[in-house]
Length: 195
Image (cartoon, rainbow, N blue to C red; front, side):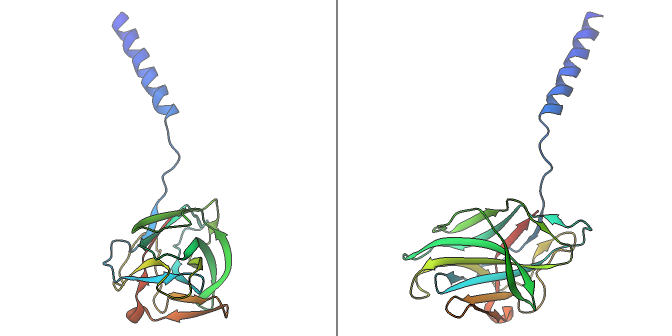
């Protein structure tokens, strides 16, 4: 009888311990091309920014954005204030900035950098852009390097994708205009999106 009581108390303690250590629901990496081979990088500085389009999947309620990951290369001196934002898409181009993400404003060494969202819901089956901007530098040799790939493939779930077509864009600060670049020539920016 004593053994049965000890066992039942042990089971109760284990159950309570498990109940109090439950963590929040894990987020999912819905889209990534980070494993693709590198083809160098393009610069982000005060003269121009860069963007990569992506499209959400089919969940009726949409997706709560958690973070995006950029693959960055070593940078040159003279640039600062690196910033990553999520933009809406209109006519296949970045349109309205929806949210600035939190993360390193000086990704000066080669590696993966996470930029977190304080909370935004992405609509299903909708295109958005990840846009990177910075300050400083008079030429392309002084810039943060966002890594690119010439491999068109990506890993995705729930219908997420990098759409076909010209989904990589360059922003010219002086004119405030975007130019879309043919990925078969200029590649795709290396990203992951987690929600």
